[in-house]
Length: 91
Image (cartoon, rainbow, N blue to C red):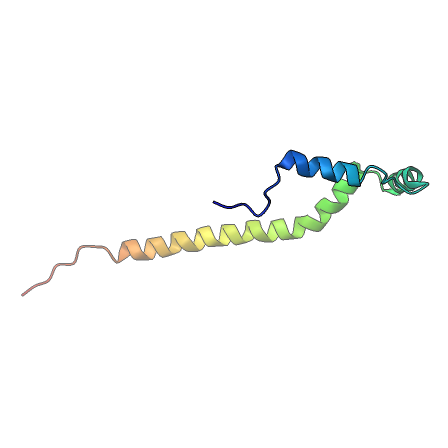
């Protein structure tokens, strides 16, 4: 089996570390990140309730669909069971 890369992984990481040694974040990077974090809305119970109200109609529709499927299935089963009755034929 031939490998596309013949260098061991440690040598490749070492080379990458040497080439990127002088790479630094731009000035003010940490301040910008912290400002964005502070601007994020706080997750809380109110946010969960708001999302729940968006999901509630779909979950109710899914529950009604399941109930309808179960009742339709039992009606079909009853009809099929009735057709399995013994039938006597007279010759």
